[in-house]
Amino acid sequence: MLPLEGIDLGPLLPEHLSELIAGAVLFAIIYVVVWKFVVPKFEETYAERTAEIAGGIEKAEAAQAEAAAALAEYKAQLAEARAEGAKIREEAKAQGAAAAAEIREAAAADAERLVASARAQIQAERAAVVAQLRGEIGGLATELAGRIVGESLDDDERARRTVDRFLSELEAQPAEKA
Image (tube, rainbow, N blue to C red; front, side):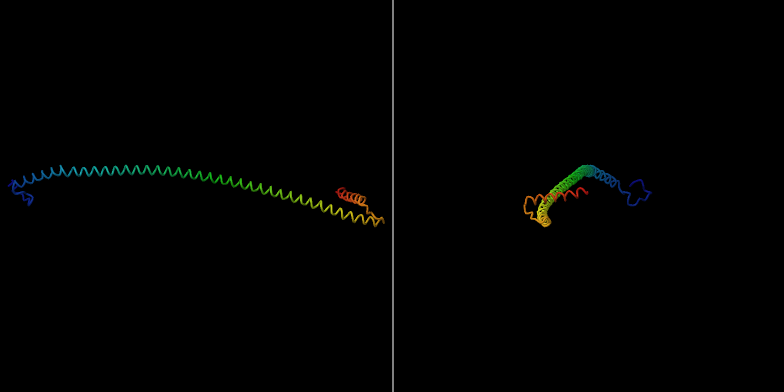
């Protein structure tokens, strides 16, 4: 027994020195086994997890950089698309304005052509009416003059000259008054 005879340690106090030596040897064996086999496995697992975490962080950083590059590319494409859209819109406006101007010019040309055609038709109809009226007025005037004079003015050439002179005098009178 040990020289601790006066102290009661209960079950913790080994009864024999051999138990103490056996405990120390077993502790040393367990310590060596743990140090030789378990601790390296823990260290290896710790290193793997550290590498995994570092690799994950690196992958995350790379993914984040890639996402930032993709975002920048997307923004550049979006800006380019907006600029192209604005350019297309401006071209469409210019084409629309050109088409509207072209349509206006064509409409103006058509209107001018219609007006010119109508004027020509009116002039032709007026000339026809004037010729017809001259003939009718000439015939009436000749007949009236023949009744007044009391002799027949059937001579066509003389009657026509008389009617023309009469109409010329009539046309000159409104011009003098104006």
